[in-house]
Image (tube, rainbow, N blue to C red; front, side):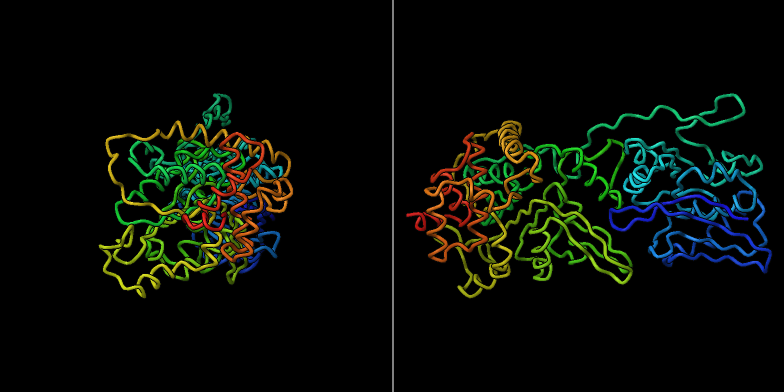
Length: 528
């Protein structure tokens, strides 16, 4: 007496379709789950037993063994509750075993038999479709999210009793006010459920300030230009200036001038948000770049990701495809700042825990804002600053050299002096230039595996840059004002400047300007 169905086990963003088998033996009553379940999944024994009883069905008075195959793969979470219950009911002959075996089941069970929503539905359904199992049963609340996956035949269920009825058991009891299948309707012939047409997905604004306009930022022409260059090439950005100079306003408007995410990036970003439990499927996939601005008291686990069993995505993964903004960056703990070095370089983070390692994408634009000193007034002549030289060095020294070396553009944001009545360019105008520059870069890198200048290999770019244009960079390297990594990153910025200017390759002027953007105004002497 064996019942079979399927579910999905998630390891990071990677989903694995697993076989759920229930065996009933004529022995002393017992219930065991094998196949490396974690504590929350192992507790499904009590949830499943109570849920089956709440549907009015007879719990099998046998020894029940549920196997989650492959047994060597760790499984976690409560998303396997429904699959375990369906396998047990199929083994007991209480539902149609053939129908139960033909679908992938996801969802957590309540003690009253209700099917509750779970995280990670989007990557789980995508894994099921990729494995050749397009028919997926999900909680009603997660149905819109499941239908975002192309090719998925997703249906939603509100209760275990409703699911048992669909699988041929009309004696199953429905909870009060529950049990209907959302997205299903009776055809009037034998009560068979048929799916309605799926709604089309529509673009949705990501969790960033997409409605903010650059027109609201008055003055700061140099900082606005640095923001545009950063957006055009996907470069990391550091802004240093006194309080009230507009650093936070500029950073909050960066997502608005970034292009829409391509379909692959949108699916990946949405999957991360689904696992993190912060995705609203009402508007479809995340088409706009996300924006994350954690408080400076955030821990390393909150920023990078963490958890006691299998780590969940942190702010850097939720910002994948968009912007991670660290306001008052020197106020963040040194541990948090140092953990950013590897993700900034590699575009992903690998988190190791006792239950295994998970890999999350983390291809974001890092934007940091900092005051020049603890009091914030060491700007211009510095007459208003009350900090000692040691205090200033200690404060800004919290941003380590290795981290700053990975930041492509570093600019001073000076106090605004007049010009408050003159509006700047609107976000739409700047975004048009950014998209044009990105299209030039995308056309140049077509088929090479990268799409922006910030991610292009420096070797490839050097081979296509004239010797005369490289002279200033090589001279700065010899003088020690730029590191080898700094030379490569300045070269990438130079190519972005060329794309904005509509040129095929950077010349000496673009390289010199890239060095100025890189070195906070100190590159003029290095170029001379």
